[in-house]
Length: 151
Image 1 (tube, rainbow, N blue to C red):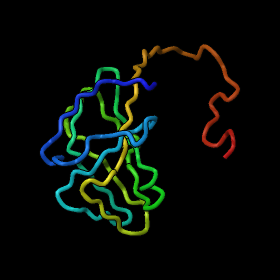
Image 2: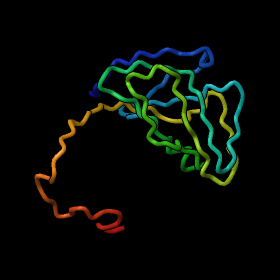
Image 3: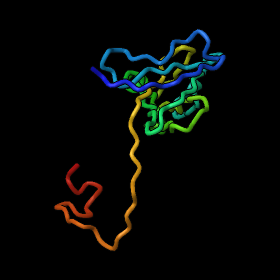
């Protein structure tokens, strides 16, 4: 059984008639978000736009909502979430909007009700920063990065 977290959801008038976020299967990690557009928007190759969902949420403290791309849109059309994953903090009460970009070669039209992204809940941890003059342990990798372990 999956763990559930209560999330308060308030819909805005331009979301009227659209489905609430829903999980496609019982074990899906992400709930689909739909475009709450008044009229279709065409996204040309290389362009980006902010797409409204008509949803606002109240997350419990200690959680974030991540906005992630839909794999089918990415594979078939090159449409993805530009700042993936986008983060919705638990203290944000504004409308959820999705920053989409067209990395494809053809124009893509976003219509009302299109599943444009998925929302994933995740726990949040805050660091207790402890400044020191050196680390307390060493590792085999050390400070090697950017390709140091292969391609």
